[in-house]
Image (tube, rainbow, N blue to C red):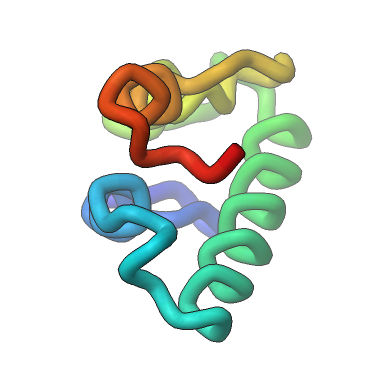
Length: 84
């Protein structure tokens, strides 16, 4: 479950697990826009008002009201899946 205006954890996971090389330009654009919108919503919402599941999702994705590299991106970097 996600907070209002936020991506669900399954949407985040689906976007993170599929390599960019296997995505169409449309999918990549959609993921980029959805990620930026989710990040903006995360930054605008105090941690105290986030659901427990959204706090966990933010910790995994790096959306903790700060610009951090997400655990998912770190894993993709280690596996060579991120575009450089």
